[in-house]
Length: 306
Ligand code: GUN
Image 1 (cartoon, rainbow, N blue to C red):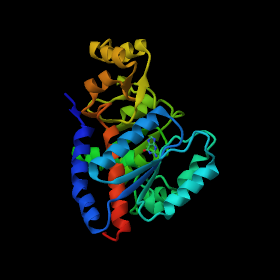
Image 2 (cartoon, rainbow, N blue to C red):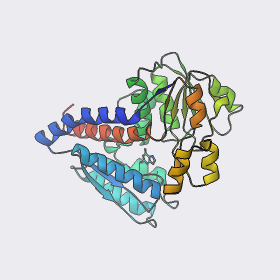
Image 3 (tube, helix red, strand yellow):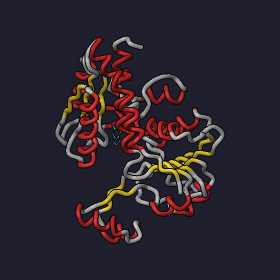
Image 4 (cartoon, rainbow, N blue to C red):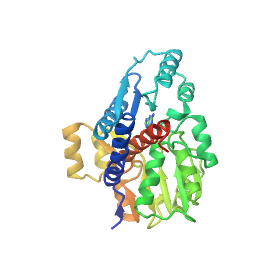
């Protein structure tokens, strides 16, 4: 039986470690402050932001959510960010992605003050990551590293294959793995014979955004699999196919009208992997925990505590 890399357990540990740091800041200066910008009405983003705000409440971090309409322009969003940059009680700023299509997302992300960039996506902080300098790391990649480290998965000298080259996950996680001395290969939609490259992996990170695309032929026996995919399936036949007619999954679908599946085939990974992060309950909870960690670290730095 493969080892399950339980993201909920690691999330709870990280949150418990953060509590005394938040309490110390609250006693000495003020509670950490996080501002979240949620533009428009993307349903998945609304759920993510609700969970982020809930985590702030659990820890005693002061949060505020700004909700500009779908029609907001780049210039208006830049003005909003400038105001948040200038407010001393705001330690962290998170612009939830994706932004509406008319907005120049890269300009908005680059407008956040690097010291308040708790998402770790500002070009300065990406530069810090590549150079191995301190700075906030992107939350999902940082969460993946916490999961691997806390389960004692060795990275030094191992072959790590990252499938997907997004700015949020693929690129930063590749550099984090490289800094742990893994031999890293980055794959994408143009990679020739993707399955053969994936079969060379000791550690496989799937961050493609395609439901159950990574099947048994991509997995070497004993591989550690990190599944970053969060794909909502709203077609019953598709649920039946991916989950091999599982009565439990079909009942969940009949109740809710959709079910979540990762980028990795859930049955093949359970059969072949040595360890894997499930969907849900793997990487997802860690993204929020690392956002909290980045916010607390930012507040400590800005308060001169470290
Ligand atoms: N949308 C999906 N994941 C993320 C994330 O980690 N940060 C932001 N800002 N938006 C996201």
